[in-house]
Image (cartoon, rainbow, N blue to C red):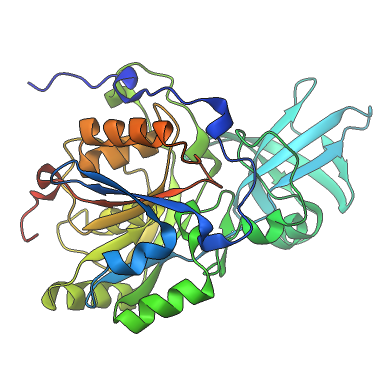
Length: 356
């Protein structure tokens, strides 16, 4: 019987000054730590070196979700401040949100905002967690876009600036619905994409709307007891066809971000990748057999987080933690606006039938 995995098995020490608080002037100016999952060997590169790590038949898969201005502030009739954080639109004028105030929130509460009044309808016990259902004065996503602010992660210790509207959004963003950015794709600019295209590598897109639960810490010691947050995804038939063609040509499927990895692996839960849509609660931990992803581009993740566990499943916990220790020593920039990694799979991660 396999011994339980503990949350502390995924801990590492991170000096606070290595947490990136703002983007670099150029998207592709970040550093790139390369980890060979088969050997554990690491190499220090630049993100602009990425084309030299790719092959002509490779397929890069990006997440085309678009971040909504999900954080909104308002006030109660008493004057007390209320913060509303969008989780998901569930109707034209209905949404599930997180809501915080100095005193308890109750159904029927009217919250005044710059765009009009929000009405708290009821507590919503959802697959995304315990939230509130609200009614907005106009269409949900348009309302938040017009009156909300960029939902920067909690480890960025500043208010959102005007530049965050652009920089906390990838150049592939098209489908509104995320409340956090798929940060691996933030490093790509038009010039780098052109170099990748010229190489002969192909591109495709998937949609996974990143939820606020991506920042939710584990509150259990035994990793097996953690309940993963739900996120909506859609894998189009064109992507499924591209993956199968890549396999036939001997190329690799390169997931640009953990959100892409979760979407692809969720769509292959029955064995073979198939087009489809739905909610995924897939929790990838060491021992998971990857069916689709051959290489992973990803930012550095929080200690003891579900995303660090996914990366550890892909390249091996010991190799990943050693690479993170190297990154700390070399003063890489961490988290959403930080540097990136290019990771190939360990042998243990690729045991699923039909995977070369």
